[in-house]
Image (cartoon, rainbow, N blue to C red):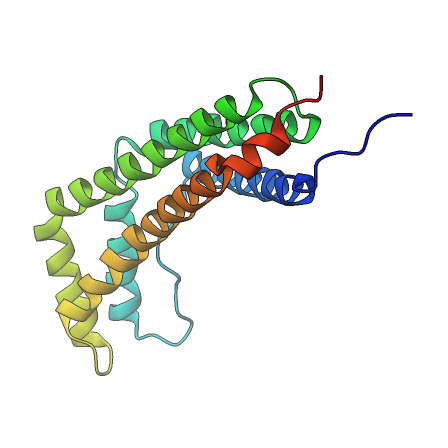
Length: 186
């Protein structure tokens, strides 16, 4: 009869399952970056001038030449997370080390994506400010600085939160109890 797994194995299984979900979402996000899509939702109740300004903002944001490369890197990082979660579930020797490497790679991808979005926003800032002013003038109660703040938050905040979440998962994985549970029994 096989011996029972260590007491912390359910926590490791949950961590591996979360890694699997995060990896799948990262692949989906990367595929979305490969296609053309807008960053900002298009509100239904807008004046024609405001809708046109918002379409121009989305067109400016979609002109990032590195968007497809970031999509490919996100897909690779997501696949790494997914595969390493399977290794953790199977308790393959060395799986903790590989899972840590996959998470660190995804944290670097998140940081690089954040940096690239910031650089693209700074490069295209004059055009974006002009369109933000047009949109703010045509919409009720918004200023151009509020529109620019919304653009910055919508582009950078998800990547920052994703990186923080991965660092938390990495911390949870590297705790000694998780490492002991991941080691196969001899």
